[in-house]
Amino acid sequence: MLQELCNLAARENLIGDTAFEVRPIAWIINLKANGDFLSFSGTHEAEAIPESKKGAKPKKPKEVAKKFTIPRQFNPDTGGTRTSGDFAYFLVDKSDYALGCALGTKAYQPPTDSKLINRHQLFISKVKSCYEATGEDKMKAVLTFLECIHMQGLPVDLPERTAPGDFYGFVVRPDVDELVHDLPAVQQYWRKFCGGSGSGPDQDWQCLVTGKSMGTPSLFPMVKRVPGGQAQTGIVSFNSTAFESYGWSSNANAPVSANAAQAAGIAMNRLLDPAFQTQEGKVLQKRHIRISEDTVACFWAKEASGDDVADGLPAALQADPGGKAGQFWQAVWRGKLPPKLDASKFYAVTLTGAQGRAIVRDWYETTVGEVQISLAKYFSELELRPNTRPGKDRELPPQYGLRTLQECLVASRKADDLPSKYAAELFAASINQRIRFPSSLLIIALERMRAEAGRDDWIDSYRRDARTGLIKAILIRNHDQYQLTPTMDDKNEKPGYLLGRLFACIERMQYLALDQVNANLSTRYFAAASTTPRLVFNSLLKDFQGHYFKKAQRKKSGSAWMVHRHVCEIQELYGKVMDPAQGYPARFSPVDQGLFMVGYHTQRGLYLPPKGKAAPPGVTNEASADTDEAAEAATE
Image (tube, rainbow, N blue to C red; front, side, top):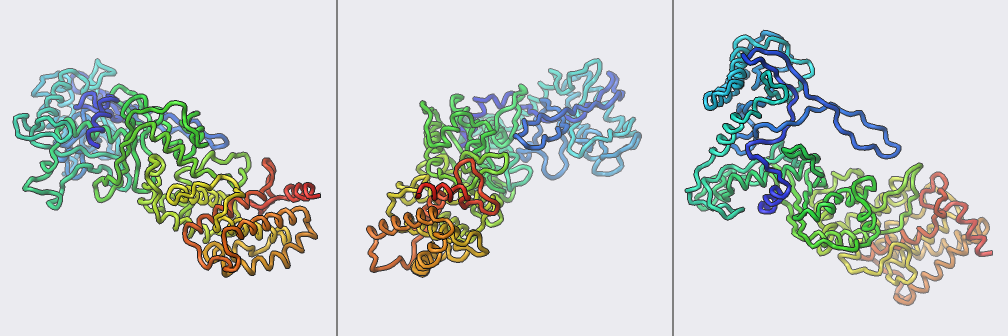
């Protein structure tokens, strides 16, 4: 994994100058050539806002600090940025280090707090070391200014708009646009400082990533934005004796050269950053998808030819037609493959943050073409004609997105409440057709189906559609039920599927006879019918023939006879595969329960209103009068 991260850093030119990085500077401190203070200049500009979706309220742009190339902010002792303890960065830092003052400081208030005094002295010492090494006049101007405010305080109030995380940089006139840290002599000094932080190459160590000889291993850089972790999280870390072996200490247990560690760390930060900016100012495309509260999946292609697939993967997995899915993903949502498959390598890793370190849950190596094939198969397995009608002025998503599937499996309807284990395995199954869905996911989905039976709010109906689609996908991939189709299959002779269809017919006949009732068949009998059919189906069919059918004939004759014909057809098929003398099964296995759910869903879909016709209020999934009238006309 570290090797491929290094390759990514090289391909996308993420490293550039290893002594520098791109970070926002909120305030420029303008100085005269003699070190006298001139002014504060804010760099804030309006943040770019993506185009709002149709009907959505446009967002108000926020003002953000402009990004600059600055000296790399790292602590050689930790390998990462500042975490605990006082440590000053070189020439660009926060107000408590760069100016020795806290927010709201007024003019001519020198630092009195011991912590502020110490931090400002640390910052001054780094500037002084650079001046002594370079003799640069503008560094002398900065040093003079810093020593002056250390004794006398700022000559003006700190700007009111300053925020706790703002960074400050320096410009010395007559320069206007060139920051002091951009001066050639200063940059050369800083490169030498960064390059000399490790031991020489004559040490007997070999880098595990590059295979080349190296000096004494230094600490691995920290990465940011790992969900569930701290502000900075370690990928390679030996911060306890429990992780050490053979007498080695710290990172000597897994020696990685400073250059390889820096490259891998920057590449990982690039993958985790939604808008990573290179030193040349280029903003790179997002390369991750957050799949739970504490887990993220990062992915990338080895070659540039696979970047289009990686660019569109987040929108494709979430079935977001407004994202960067393009025509390719539109076809994949329908289970179709592109005409040409890319044979270049594709990588993915799922990370979970815990106790200050990143846990690598899974590492995947495949090809871009295999990802294309796997996604087409995944969406083909999920495909199911929805029983939910679009809401007002909105269309249903083209497929069931990853987050929708997570939401439909938990009672809270919050995707982050699904355990990370299942979320990560769902992601894995989507990009690799050889990986099965988690075996226990079928049980979870079945339990939610029974718990939410009878609910007919729009969101409940859509969640039920998505859940049934997932059940269908699990049955196909894990249990070889390849005969399942997106719509009702009158040739399917599986007992579970047939009894699911039969229950939908009885439920429909009850609706035709009684219209809406407080507790319909789903509310009262769905759980028992799908798990222990022998307990309920005899009594249900008795009510069907002796009560519901007779009453429905008087009210809606055509629809009643249509449903009756369906029941006869189902019973005839059931008699072919099961011995009528044995009755209905005493108990269904989880696979049969899943088939019941799919059969119930697809049969119920036959009784939906025609496309373009809305169901009446409170009847989200039931047929409207238009369906009944059409059935009566066809019968007559």
